[in-house]
Length: 112
Image (cartoon, rainbow, N blue to C red; front, side, top):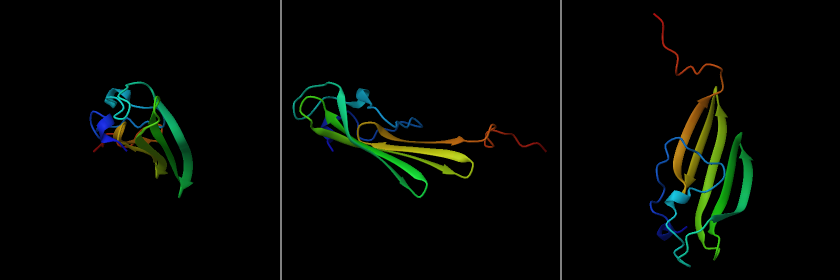
């Protein structure tokens, strides 16, 4: 993967987890051909391991096919929550947890 093509390596994206696409605001331009254009997504795969979905793909320069970054996105259900993670040199790192219940138990106030 190429740290010379991005403004910041693995930027913190909070809870924004991308299953597909590219974070072009972090792309400074290809270090090989010196062009700043859209990215190609190649080698996309979806695997399931122990109840966890794992999506991986490569971000490539549209012009010279230089590999800029490898993207990994995961989704799983743990107890009463959906959990998402993303790790990518270009798109950043993020994680999110969402309740599958109508009312999120983390948001409820205790009544005494």
